[in-house]
Image 1 (cartoon, rainbow, N blue to C red):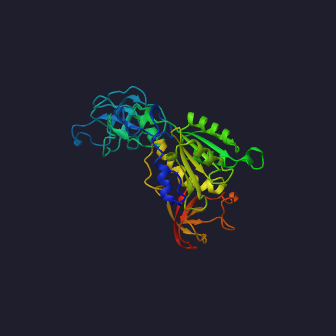
Image 2 (cartoon, rainbow, N blue to C red):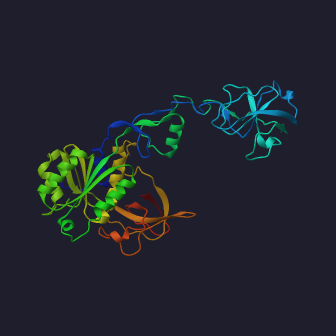
Image 3 (cartoon, rainbow, N blue to C red):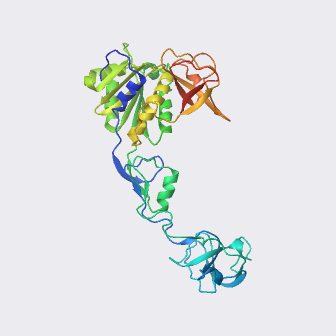
Length: 405
């Protein structure tokens, strides 16, 4: 894994990084949006849990044959079954008012006359003494117990993201917890003496915290470290003790003050790190390591380079850490086919180009206005919504693939 001085392609570097990541251990926890199932999830109760009414109306015993009931006819109303109240059984020649969701006696052979088919006004009101039925429905409007799903039905497989629809289905079928992967713990270390002495504000750390948080549940610790190798080694040791991933920015080239690379090369076995250049712009200097078994992703220090590298690599790698399906490659992510709204810069290397994306009758992607974006042009990032990975020129009006943030 050590650097050979040979440039890697984006795909080669992605594969190297991906080899470091495995899904986190599982634990049983309440169903919360953003967790990822480590085991399949099964319904504990049938849906519906009991026979119930699909309509507001009147429950009557089913006739032996359709000819036994000739409309119009009038029946006395002997009871009322709002949703959540005990059920009642109408005797032959009687009716029970019932609301949508009201319980029907289990297996009861009956039918529900929608209120619209009767002389009873729509809306709230007291229970009428009688109901006149003008015409019979074409079905019985009874939802039978388990007609949607049975107990034991698989609601979702492993590696499924817990979201609002799954929470609704699970709680409705009696499931309020699941075996899920642990929430990732990420430590971000922004490096550079200029961040300590106040020459520059740390923009990379907060930017990465926001970016990583936007990808899903994470517990994030963020810190800043100067160019002291002893202090950075201490930060690495502390992070490795309670993190699942360490992300650094800056210090990955081969200069006299590139402290991240120097500390890792002095402290980590030679087959457990790599530093070098990836054939991409911006963000060619890259590195990764294992520090006490914890993956370390070393991003460049220039803010645009750090931003696009995080989107290109970190967002996908966090999927694997969370237990979601492992991406098959760097382009295995949501994408859109767009029309270029302006000329994109001609790439001399594979270019990760942030762009705005507008969706009207068609999808249009455009690079930020102004001069070609450089790795330090952080003010060009606001207003972008995704990136294009370009290996050839794209002129206005031509199609291209864009990857939304």
